[in-house]
Image (cartoon, rainbow, N blue to C red; front, side, top):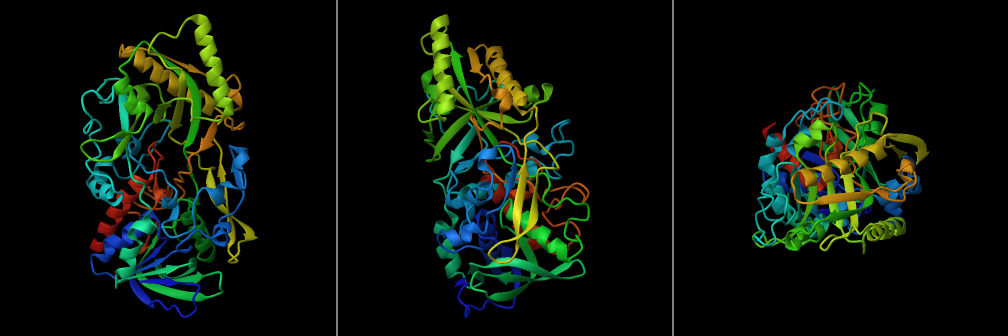
Amino acid sequence: MILDGLDSSAMPAPHYDVCVVGAGAAGITLARKLATRSLSICVLEAGGRAFDQAQQDIYAGPYEGSFAAEEFEYLRTSRTRMLGGTTNYWTGYCAPLQESCFEPRPGIAPNGWPIRAADLAPYYPEAAEILQITPPVHDSDAGYSESRKPLLVHRPHLRTLNFHLSPPTRFGDVYGAELAAADNVHLLLNTTAAEVSMDGDRVTAIHTRDLAGNRRTIGADHFVLAAGGIENSRLLLLWNRAHGNRLGNRHDQVGRYFMDHASVHMAGSWFRELPHAALNAYLFQQFDEVRRHHTKAALTVSPEWIARRGLPNFLVHAGFMAPGPGPEARALISAARAIDEMRGATPAGSFPEYFQLITEPPLDADNRVTVIDEPDELGLPRTQVRFRLPPDYPDTCRRCMRALVEAVGAEGIGRGRVYVDPDMGRWPESGQFTHLQDHHNGGTRMSTGEKTGVVDANCRVHGTDNLHVASSSVFTTGGVPNPTFTIVALTLRLADHLVSA
């Protein structure tokens, strides 16, 4: 059943087995999964069925850090306050987090996740079906004919990270009718979770607000925050103000270690003729002849090469100039072409174009979600985000690309060249060749204890008995793949935990 919170006559039940805050990828996945277990579910969605500017403006707030051109707009434009959440504009790229993302790595992620890749692996096949792609998703070269198989799949020093492309799944459109027809699910639209009541370590009720001035109280045995990578932190910060930092914040961890993926465009060239049919897997979306959906391959180097050089995980997309990067990068590519022509360094079969580098976000406790005194349209404190890349980030980009070029040479399959902007020292402040991917990770990180994070290995908020979190806000590290696939897998794992609790 779907109710509109703006309608004062809409009356949900006073108590449910589970109350879920948010109806995006995590919230809808959780509601659908739990509904099959005959549990009563209430889902509180802050937005409506369609985009509404008044709702979206509630997300506005100051941004501090790298990419200054996005100041004050990042919080409003990088997420969507409506049924389906950010799945209303995601691009559909799906790949599991690599095993190394979960492991402790000196200088990169000292503690690692409290779970390992093997703990999530059983949930990726069902996540794939939910995202309308065909499992399995770990065999990176299945589905390609021999003539079109990615070139570097099995190379010792190089790896192919294969993205499987969801249509992309718009969760509100695809699963909204199912939720509306479910007798044991009440989806309340245009309804914001504003405050909570507690009894000891248990949350007993959520108190809601909406733009029509209605107030409601929802009781439940279990509560799950699935409001997104930024909003989860904001709500926990607000609730902790009223409850003495008892909800995962006894050690000032809520909102910290916020992460996003930075995308960097660089001009580049491959030298020596390579099989174009194989290279096409990296340059273009390819139709997987076995799974019947599209894929797009990216390049990276082996975990051993990454560890030996003390690098974060990274991936590189290759592409042609059009419709690729903006005018500054186009000018750089044109200059690169001219230099190659003067040197006579453009043999048949090479293609000077561009690389898109995406690195694992750095862990920095000062990159964080906070709240400020300025109220939003519902009278709640607005959100502020700080995300600043470290001063050595340009050097990290150079080192990643150097590792890739060296790996290509070590494999004996050719040579590569990357043309670094002479003003790269101003990156990322100039914003000329970089942008954020709008992948909101961290803020309520998974950890073994409350001194280093907000939720435990089962996504339960430290210091509480019945409050859990579902979204990329629980990511201990950001990895490099787009987060939606892993969000859904983690949510399915959480559903199993809640059923057995």
